[in-house]
Image (cartoon, rainbow, N blue to C red; front, side, top):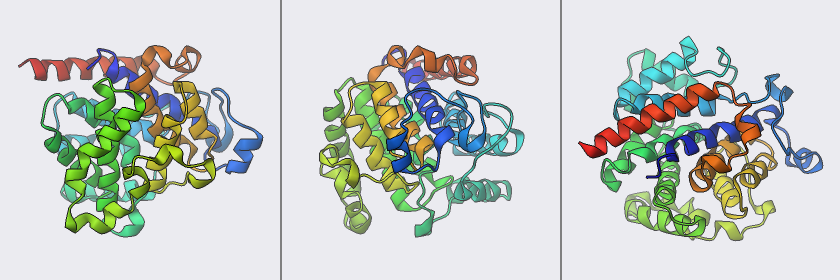
Length: 316
């Protein structure tokens, strides 16, 4: 793992998220007529430039928890502290939270086992677990791939326990693993989906796996913009993020393309930005954007702590 990979991924998520926050819920037509080209502020939530949303907050909560090793209760407690004690918020207030995530955190506080806290019905397949799952990839050097994906599933279940959300997270992390290994974008995509097929191509999962056909055929990048949706549905976000990543040639181009798809702009760009950060590296995220990111120094310090924790685990 490249020494800066943790910072690259975490900052990749936060910058993409912050680019999308001011225009969340705007239509694609609005974005095509008035595209976002740089970091802005105000807009939807009336926040200053560089403000990230719950997407990054929960990503940073997860990363912080992983400094102590993988423990689902520790992660769940961190999510609760964010919701009710404003831990890992950009400016000391929670200004955005998905309904499914909110209910899951309430369940945890009411004593529900964390792995059973997330809702399981079909209508609870928003992108709320996918948007925060990236830090799990940093455990790839410490456990088997199969174990990693099982942990990813558990981590999704904290808030989004339907198998569709679990599969979305698993595919995303599998591709991220290949990027960490240094593969080019298309190879990481193709090898990433091949790696999870033995897990997901199981008779009991046939119906759910078929919903990911456009990703699992290895041809998502061949679709037109008109065929890509950018709502808050987990499959739409996974498809859109991979499409943006595979049809661009820089970090900036990838995340701006994601924002300008409209609708769930912050999450599409955060999910895109995590993978783009891993691939292009910290040094290729525009510095003028990074400088505006809320709590930039805290994020850098967190990346250092997690890096030290991971390397101490692999060396022992």
